[in-house]
Length: 114
Length: 114
Image (cartoon, rainbow over all chains, first blue to last red; front, side, top):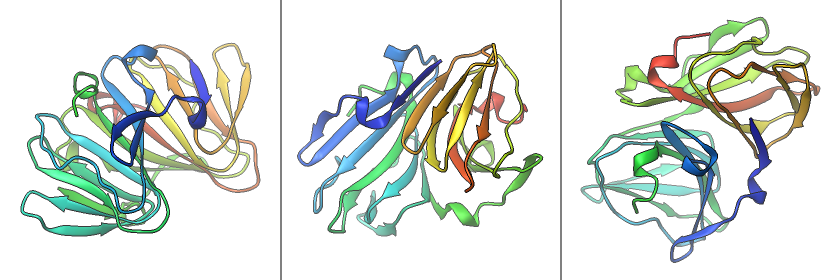
């Protein structure tokens, strides 16, 4: 088993104002899926993209908006869960003044894709 | 996409003093893995068990102890992450006075196993 504090996992650059921690992934021996935790600074957002694998997201802190493939937005807040099926365009934007933090789980083979 | 509040997902009985919410799973169309959120009442614990699939856990609230196959315990707290590989015996016990809440992701084929 591996037990560790989130803050002990190295935060890596993902996009401008966005950090990613791969808290459990292929390096830890995860065979099927990877858990990542993202931090998005106020006013910033993740890439607006689509890919051939799903996201399972839980918002931990902050306020944000999920932007869909047609530019529609839905406000999200802590303890909101989001399922983004494969091939649906999306991004998450921080619409508040504090850091937006969320868990995002993907298949291991999707972990290194941006 | 599916966006909803954790509290809007039905909480189901898992064990004495333990509730489970399958926030994203096969019913939502998740193809590979399922995200569940557990709540364990003070003094209670999940089943002490092993199974042939992995757990990826993030502690959200409360204080607890992870008990391993030899009865060894490790204290856990919010924003601790835990990777439990397949076939390693384990349980999570609430050692605090408030509810212990955590996210636990499993392969979809493991979701209905206790």
